Image (tube, rainbow, N blue to C red):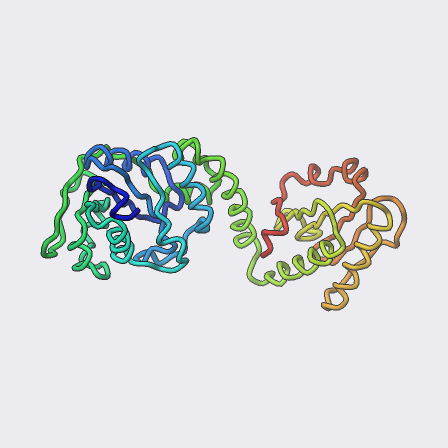
Length: 330
């Protein structure tokens, strides 16, 4: 937005954060800030990687952005600022605010901060320069009195906001432990959150259930799946057992569309395993039964025709196994 596009100066709010993921507390604070500071618009700016946050975000940047978009579409005065996430690098708030200010030099910029972030403002990079081009709206996370940092020319207002017992950290921990989170996330955002935490939970299970001494198993599973996909295997799925089975660690299940296709799938897997010096315990000779088995000891490959896969329903038989897809091996 350029200077010539606005007839009067705007009050533009800026709400930065990881939004990992966005939750009801974020939305409530955003709405309260718009009303309290009489903002014409509020930019929600997801960070690619927050400078003061040592760990990487739980949800990938593109996913966090998509989830956030489902929320802003329902709130006319909220917009997404992509200046940080589009650069795919750690970026300091000063540079983002400076760029917003350059696009709209007559506007007032109000940065929304929690009391914990505000108290550490003097530790931010370029904090002296930042306070020259914006003011701050500080919200409470607790009933503790806010002590402002000692920075010359610091302009701020304390917002008497509703205290909301919700945080992205709590949500991530609940996801990791398999607890429900739908009551903490905006209704519009929850389907996307659920879609991606299902995938992430599978990844967490893979990395936490498989002992370090079996990390080679992951590599061998991927090699085998690549061999199947190279020959156009269909409906590929993995069942991981861990300590639940004394016979093997994992099943790879795939479907072939004909007996010749099943034979081609089996031959390519056996050839690939041999090339990678992966031991085979036993293998079926090809018979047109619609079910071929390749036993590699640590994992077993089951190749089915569509009809036989439905008949044997092996996924239902092993309901306690962790179900994974090929993408979980990457």
